Length: 197
Image (cartoon, rainbow, N blue to C red):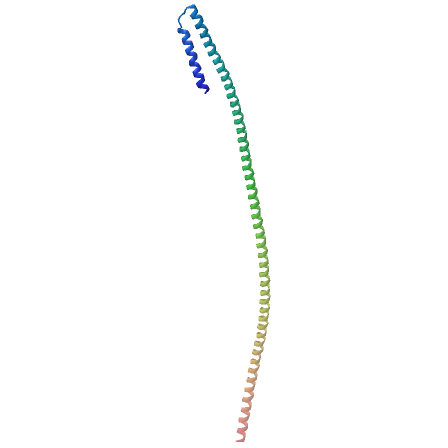
């Protein structure tokens, strides 16, 4: 991978630098040949380093693009999450509002039912009371009529009692008169009988 390539190139570069540092002076011919070979090796290393830097720059750019894409994706996710939260909150509020509306409607229906029931019960009770009042009025009329009959009967009994008392008094007088006449007649009869003797 990229990290292993970087490590390998760094190791090669370090080896070249060490070889150049410890190299001994050579004869002019050898020095010329070895210098050309060393320069070629250095150029090769520098070219590899340049390629590596180019790859690193490309890789960094790719990472930056990925990071930017990740940031945009994260921003979209946050936006979607925020929208979802707002939607959930709105849904909860709507549900609470509907529940409150349903509760109010239920309370109104129960109140209306209770009011209607109370009105019906009141009407039934009023009708029953009126019926009882009519029955009581009939009973009162019947009782008054019965009391009237009793009063008339009592008056009749009183008149009859008075007549009976008067009759008894008359009979007593008549009886007394009869006794007196009987006594008088007896006396006369006794007197007549005495005269005959």
